[in-house]
Image (cartoon, rainbow, N blue to C red; front, side):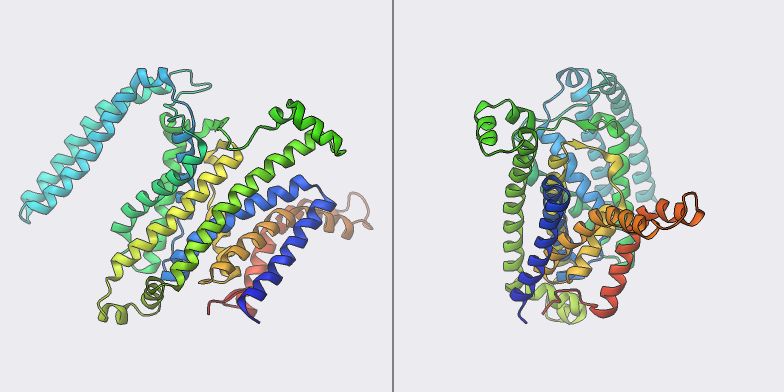
Length: 434
């Protein structure tokens, strides 16, 4: 069976599951699954680019997704003029001073002769630069966060269309990946995993604690949309007349209309990313990356710069995750740093890639949709199943209460079970790499 036929069959099966969800639950729920499935498929493509093409074990996916979400705030939200007047320029000056301190320490390391004098000079420069940076940063930070903290307390963004934030999210994640890759890609795979996980946690910690940047755990709500608001559609006489003429409820129809708009946008992005990934896979560059993945020593003997190529694909994969993060934040309409958890934004994406088929782009898309559908639906199905199983038990029974209370854990149990079954019976995934 060819890959195209296999993918068509799998895709048809997932489509039937989503249609059944729409018929048995609601079409709003079905479209929510579709939209987040599209975003998850894009994230899985980014990880597949790193792991499936190059064998890079990146467990810091959460950090790059969060940077994409941050880009949505920095680009789409309007600037807070009072906050800028209170300390915006001083914040920028302090960040320049911090960058100058780091750059100066690097230059001292490069150009001073090796020895104790170089070490002492670097330490002294870093200490002085740190205190100068804090002297400029702290007052500005306090002033900005004191500007109407209940609703703002941060600098805001540029007020540009939210769609601009999606590629900017990719650029922001790519820049962070370049910095990380320059220091961490020389490490062995297990050390690279530890480094990326730690850096992802640092990114989340910054988002949670630096209120001047994106309000921290107070969250940024009311992000602009690339599609109309439901209430605007409900107040549009033309839309109301058209919907009522077709016999639909206006509130439900407006919600479905908005979700379909997101679906079209997300599908367009997924197709673009998938086509580019396929072209890259079948190009000489893609064959070179897989050769490096399979045998770095042989690739180096053929004159390939392994570290440079690893950095290249690490940046590209992270940029795709950043784009997906910006899309997800746009869909949510808010940035909530507390919601970024490794279980959801790293482990689950890896499960998608492994189950779908590492090294196969269509497998990554398939895994993204399948695993997200199960992640959403297993919990309600588990609660229903436990209700059926315990229906004959006496009320107040300890076993009945225990089963019903723990039905919510069916989600984690099912994810682990699926992963184990796939690794046992199809270790290369549902759609293996050729």
